[in-house]
Length: 128
Image (cartoon, rainbow, N blue to C red; front, side, top):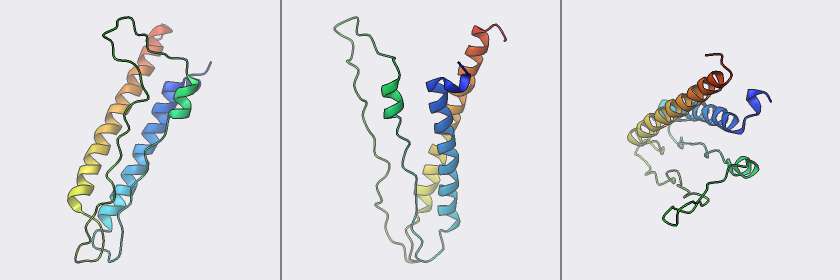
């Protein structure tokens, strides 16, 4: 099985690509902050439900005190609650900069998990 077929690595690559594209969209929002009529945009988070359902990983509950596995809590991205500024657009520098910083931290975390996963696979094959 090629490494590219491992579901978790495929999901991590997809997540990294999504963060790269989101960074571009958020940077466009900041660049167009003074453009009259411009409306801030954002990307919808990727949906991994289909991929997760196809994997055979199941959490074991070996003790009644364990928390039961569920579908996970869904957190909505910031809903468009932007105020319209006097310059006639919906870009808030503060909101965009917070999103950019958060996106960068999430990208760094996913990249770190991906790198460590590859290192573990190399170690398992005795190549490290």
